Length: 214
Picture 1 (cartoon, rainbow, N blue to C red):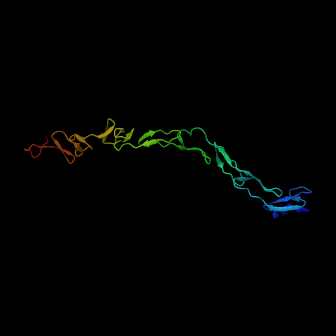
Picture 2: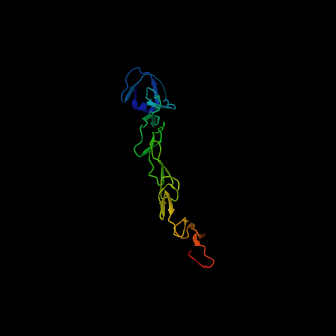
């Protein structure tokens, strides 16, 4: 018997029709079939598979195993119900100038290139390379700029300190032999005949003097 294709579509939505065609042909609007053996639900694809051919009135859907990417590839698009895995080759070679590789290519993502850190505020322990970012260290607190971490690695000083053989030192007040600041009360040591009194160098007066300057 002749059966309208629109009727079959309505009746068999989501199903496959297993039939023996005894005569006629399939057209855009009609299907002439013989004895309908049975109708059943279209099979679903299993885990790790995708539908490579859709279910039709006369044929079940076809399922194919999801593609596995090669060791030199990563998954650009994961396998889904209707599409296979899309693999993409891992990037090769060094990152662009001014960048370093912060993560290697894995099965799930391409390698990651990251901009090198800016110039160091302190001193540079190691420069930015293909595999590692720039490493910086802090100057000693007495230095303005430096080439290392120690007090004798200073390259320049904050005023009023001055550079002396790699160390930043104060220009002591004339009354001090040594000091930790620029004023007359910043003395840490005194010359002969003087004593330190609350940061100031004072003369030890003769017993005959009430005050003295020597």
